[in-house]
Length: 59
Image 1 (cartoon, helix red, strand yellow):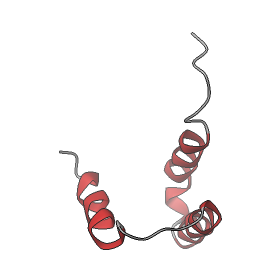
Image 2 (spheres, one colour):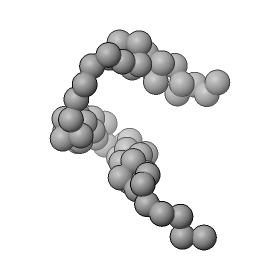
Image 3 (tube, rainbow, N blue to C red):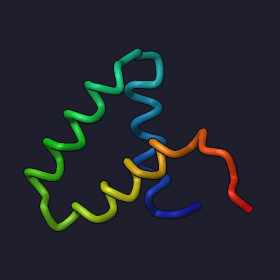
């Protein structure tokens, strides 16, 4: 298990039953980056990865 899995597990345990919009998530991500600008690159990578999940593979 990666160290980051602990945070993901906590998120799932605390908020796993909740429903939310992507607009809400995007705003929380912006808020996080504003408070923690040193994490801008990983948040950008996560957002881009999530946005492109359904893209067809171009192999």
